[in-house]
Image (cartoon, rainbow, N blue to C red; front, side, top):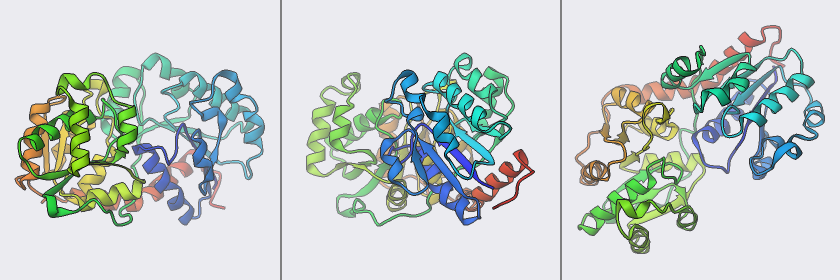
Length: 373
């Protein structure tokens, strides 16, 4: 069996989907299932098992992006037995539909499945989801939203991620405990709320190190949101001061290094600000954090609420509340948050161990006429 996966992005782009794809490819290969990832991230084409596809490049425009796609697909040998898409229903669903149409033209009869990692508007997503033979989700939260808003029945597929990575240099305990936020640097991920909470605590005399693992400080400043001063006046300048003092660190890490950072840290912070159907659809890094058994600070956002209900080392704070977040971070910095006693960490490790085999079962179910080559 040969599998073709496709997503707008791949590593070195930072995100939960990219973490999963980076892990699952080699795992499928180890099971004897050749696979290739088509990605719109130009730099990703230098990696083994990944090929750059202009039609998936979000920086390319219009029909120029998809011109020649059928020829490029036809040149792939052997042709795939199953096509597994990721999130082509969001960001640019019109182009996603064009990509599926090209695949149907080149490989008529080949099953096409899609994993919905983010939800997106129902009307825009419908042509893409309706063109697929099966729709999968990583969390029951996404599945319930899709049934309610789209009327689509789904199947669940687990996420994979690296269990360990290279040693990190950020877990220096000389300045107190280490708290890590392993997310992209965006407003929606709560980056500015956590920074406002951290600065307030450091200015008040607290001693700890806070590491944001989704960006360098230079790139974070380039993405700075003007709303940040409403959270704490002069936030950017204050962060810069504490970066200079070494109490706040920024690092753009690989998925394996991010996992190791969470293992080395004392507390993980995951403060997504989205609520209701716009809440966190899964939170791969939060799931990874639960695998460490460390205290985990979460907001009431989508699937994070589901995770918190199962993970006894979680502290749930109000969404978009700097004050609530600061109180939890203070407790984490002072060692007052509990570590895990439940078996969820073991369950997550087992899910990762069997993830590729579960995928192969679904691929075989979709195309039972082929075996592994």
